[in-house]
Image 1 (cartoon, rainbow, N blue to C red):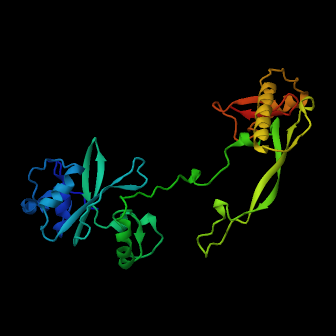
Image 2 (cartoon, rainbow, N blue to C red):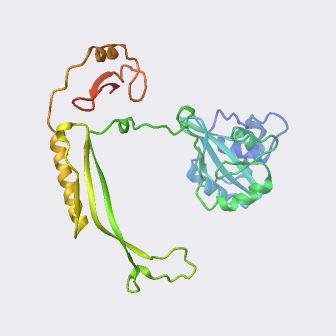
Image 3 (spheres, helix red, strand yellow):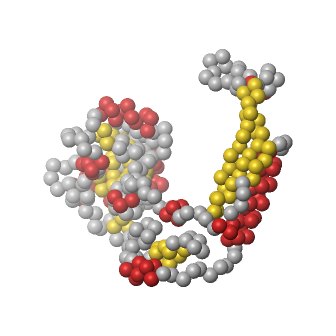
Length: 319
């Protein structure tokens, strides 16, 4: 990158563009290397320091400088781990492109010219040799031909940023440890039905497409159900409910609602837990990790005791 040291003005954008258009043989970081070209750029009605909203105006006012050019702006993201596209020129078909990096320096912004884009984003590829970067998505390609084939499709979308996850959070992990606890109650249900052939009068029996892979042949008509409430509490066990007859779904729904209300009534009762055994107390004193997620106990994740039921095993877990 070429960083022109303009300590006495706010024209870093101007010097950055000129450093690209008129690269000197020596001292590219000095302002005096470009002062003789200062009047070649049209900044009418554009105030300094230049903001991103003024970039398009600058492009329109300078269509024929040296060679037809466009300006693209990227910046570091908030964590300084990658880059994001701040401004993508709509004039991508122009012959000359000026790629600038926008930096936040001491509560102000500063533009520098990206002399070699492929080196700036070299960490995005394992390709050895020259690489070619898309200004819209910042992906790296191994040849100019592949990049030119990619650009028309990429420009159909707004500029994008590839965000990589943190190394410690890049794997899908199971986190719902509470789902591993056995339930005090659950319902096991089964339906019985018989098949009736579909007739020509049925709306869903039509096969308008002769090449269709599937077609309705039979209908499942529910004839009955069985529902059994499973629990580890002997005093709450009930025989299964069996029904066969008309309007099966209505009877099933009413039965499920009644079971739900009965279970809620049972679980809402506040019954004292049975006392801990000596073995439970010993395990509690010596435990250093959560019994559910196996995370170590800390000041924020302190040790607690719980039971899944009145007669269930003691759990040593974190908050």
